Image (cartoon, rainbow, N blue to C red; front, top):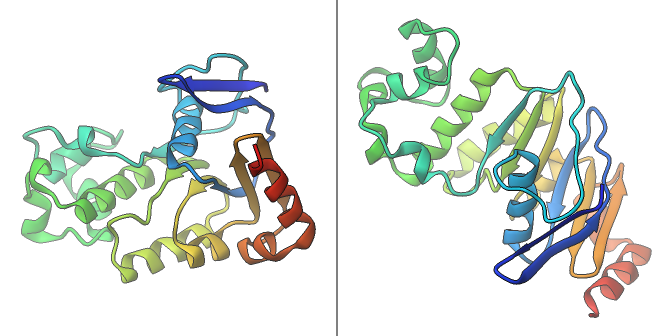
Length: 217
């Protein structure tokens, strides 16, 4: 309710009101990636809003996929021990099972976390999310650094996911097939469309008019 945030003198959003319901899979659009990242960071408690407040339902368990993840891998741990630190179950075979789902098997799972490529870090972050048992996923550009096969697997997993997803992505097909609600954050407010796909959102004449008006600052 009424979320407002500026960074370095630049307004990210002002007076943002939003209700998220169980089962919503919301794709956040907008001309500035920083705006979406800022909203996600506020919702995860990493930064505080200048004004306004937000509240999660008592039964929600959240997991977060940040757009920039390097800080999570500044460690000398190998992948088994890296992932183990996020798991209540510490058994090595249990942890290796989650790494295996992300295609880290055998010697691959003993790699140092600090030497991973961008795509490997993404896969590790996804394994970390899977371990959490979350029913609310917040994902900031999860398709970055992934190859087509991995994007397809993530896409299918999120389509089947029974919980709530808040996400951003520049992959048109990913948004088209995962999202059941589209929110575009603009300089003068937001456009919020439920029960719609990305293609319907982009081609609807009424929405086009509203978007144009909100960008004409």
